[in-house]
Structure formats: C-alpha cells, structure tokens
Length: 364
Image (cartoon, rainbow, N blue to C red; front, side):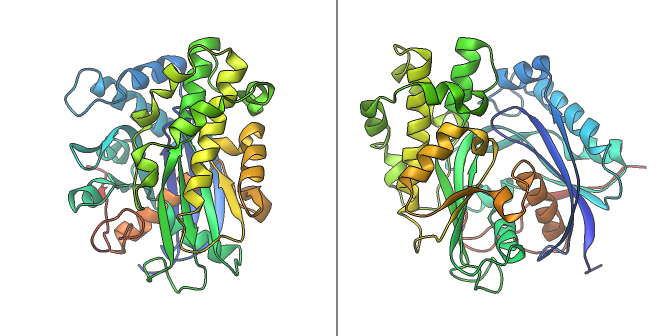
C-alpha cells in the first residue's frame, strides 16, 4: 500500500505530564489531513513511579513498574481513537546516553499491539544510536512536512519546548527532508524540565501555569551567563541532551525565592535557544513554537525579545502545538513501515539516512 492512510501517534515527553495521541492521514511524505486528538494525563501515582525510574536502564529496579504505567496510560488514550490502520508509539524516555549506554524508552510495543489489535511501530531511536547517531531529535522530518503544509516560502525554525528544548531549521524549497540542506536539528538546552521540577519541589505543582511566577521574578544574570559556558552549547550540531543534563541548575537557584528562581530558569532556557539560533545554516524568517513551553508567557516574551525574527506559537499557522509530536510519530510510523528514512546526518549526526523503529503485530 502506497497511498495515504490514517495512523495514530502517541507521545509522552520528558515533562512527564501525560500522553498525547493524535490521528494523522499521511503517506509518510505529505500531510493529507489532521484527525481526532486525545490527551490522558499521568495520574500522580503513575508520574511518581516513572519519575523514580528516570536515569535507569532495562533490568534496573523500578523500570518494569514504570513501563507498565506507560503502557497502561497509552492503551487507555489510544483505544479512544477510531479508524487508525497502525500506531506509532514513542514510549517514555527514562535514559538517553547516545555515546555511552544508548537510549531507553520505557514501554513495549508488543503489549500495545496485543491490546489495541493493531500493528505498532516503536523503538524509533535505537537503530540511529547503534549506527553512531544521537537518537534525537526525531520530529524534524515531520517538521519538514509541516513547513510544506503551511506553504512556507523561506527558512524557518520549529522550536519545541518540552522538558528539553530542541529546534528544527527547515528550508522548504527542498524536495524532501532527506535532501541536502533541507533540515538541521538539535537540542538547544533545558526546556521546561528545570522549571517544572522547581514547581514540584517547592509548591507541589506540575508547572508554572502560564508563566505567572516566572514573570513576577527577576532573573540572576550571573547564573544565566554561567549556564551559557557549558561545553554542550558550543558543540556544533547535531547534538542531543538527556533530561537530567542540566539538573544541577536546581542547586544554582536553591538560595533564591520562588519567583526569582523561576525567572532565572526561564531565562536560562531562552538564552540557550538564542545561542542555538546562531548555529542555523541561515537566519530563519520566523520561529514557530510548539510544546508546553509556548503556554508560558515568560518564555514567549523573553524569546520575542531575544530572537531576531518573529516568534509565534504554531497555532498561528494552523498547527496544533499540543499534538505536533504525537502526529510526528504517526508520520514516522508510516515511514518505518514503508522503508523510508526517519533520521539523517543533519538531524541526529548519524553517518547516513536511517530508518529506525520496529514493528509489532497483534498476536493471535
């Protein structure tokens, strides 16, 4: 089958908020239509089980329980989407060490295939890492399709602010994402994770809702300047981070009041993005922001002041920033099933175009 099909994609990001699920009609090259979307938050007990397993690898204590929580949440939300021919399942990243132990996304695609009665494409990152790539980010080929769908005429950046920040620079004049010069992608630095962790630790809240606390504080410029000296930020892309790579920021704001600590962490995230934009092949005409960070007014205001081009949420061009990554794994699932590449030298640093992922079919 070569034509467009309806596919369900699911994504649970490093912010640990819950599972996004979306239907997408695609042939793995183009977007034909957007379908129904669903969201299922992790319950507090599930979130704590998953959080306790962060940084752990298969076989470690707590990993099986985390995987079960991930599978349960995904099965619940995906079962509410009708009409899909297959599923793209990212799983929940617990550890990411591409130059060391590899990458670990909790959740077994076979379990979901059996529960849902559909083929499930999963384990998208391992092949890329095994072949020398960073294994992340994986949404860039979908971002290219989005740029085509919105009719972009010049270079642009999709900025995803999840737990970790990452961007995709796109030249929409190219024929496809595999073409030389079509895309470049890399992790920018911390996204929402340090701020989310601060809110959880100090106020028992999942996030700084709307950026209200960050807006009320004053950022410590010294902490921001120190963060920008990290070796990761001076490395040329592609490059990727683990959620915990900036965990020490918590100690740097430990002596501050809540508002100033939140403002400082928001300022670090934005400074890292501004630094990253200078590494793009050409200045973007605009930056389109997706992920939970676009709801944080402090982040959006600071980005608008720091970047040399318009900054808008992806909704400004008719896309759904809450579901873009779920849609991306639906798109990638079709590419895996049809033997197309899912990553390449300018997205993950892998030596050649790679089609990652494995397919599990319902047993019986």
